[in-house]
Length: 71
Image 1 (cartoon, helix red, strand yellow):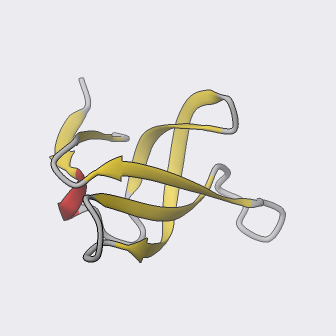
Image 2: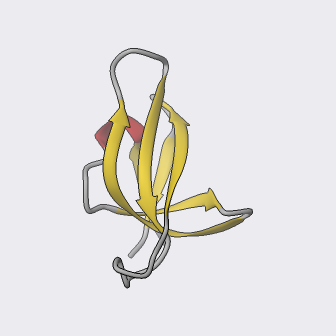
């Protein structure tokens, strides 16, 4: 069972489960791009543990959404 946190509480380095690159997968948060100006949280994430070969992607959540942390 995965722990859920509010999107507003996500931090850099967190491993979350998100719909990215056309599938649900574990993503590691690289940067928080936007968290204050809109009703959304925009994150830059990696989809692999190998950061040097991994392409970053952008995912977006509503500020009050519950997000699964990968265990």
